[in-house]
Length: 259
Image (cartoon, rainbow, N blue to C red; front, side, top):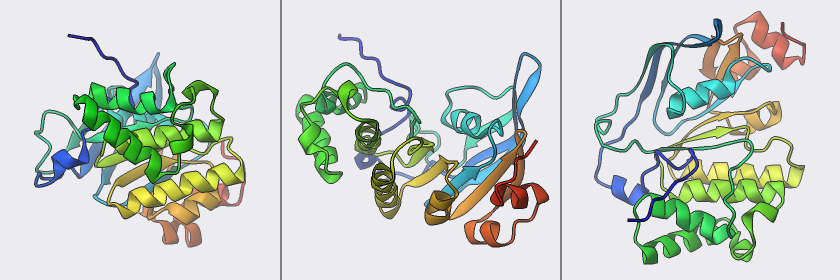
């Protein structure tokens, strides 16, 4: 039997078709979660609950623990203290239905289409189904013209859109996005935001990091604000942007440096 390997963004995703008639894995609950390395605590005592269908944006200055929090939630790293658990009635299913797209997408040395079909092969789909699903994802997000091009020569914006389409093709219930439009121009950023909105409209639960406050205002239902690895605020987006509860969040929104 051929051995298949895949980037971490694919490993926990399960096709959405398999979810029809199956219970949700959500909520995702963090209880006093910490992560320390070489004696330094980078994430400190996080207690958070992520509920179904919400778009949660994680904000904070550099070094606040935003990306680490996503990696902990996705299971790429284990907490050094505390517990992370899926508490929905579908949690006992053998494969958890979540995916992650990174700031720098992982592209295999093959065509854009083959990047999608390989991910689907890892998930156990038959050859014909893989191709149908891959084309569906490319067409859904206007990428069919890139199908035969080597994925690694695509522009940064094209690669990120392809990574997002690849994650969508796996039909996850929850999607983690780590600064998906960082370093992209306004046009490419707009395309990424349209994809995120489409995911949300289809019922995906999204947890995302960004440094772009305008983007956070446009996309967030809820905001988590981290500072020094600690949870400072977890509030509805409108409240966070109009009436932040903490001095640190207020200073961050004004563009002040936090130490």
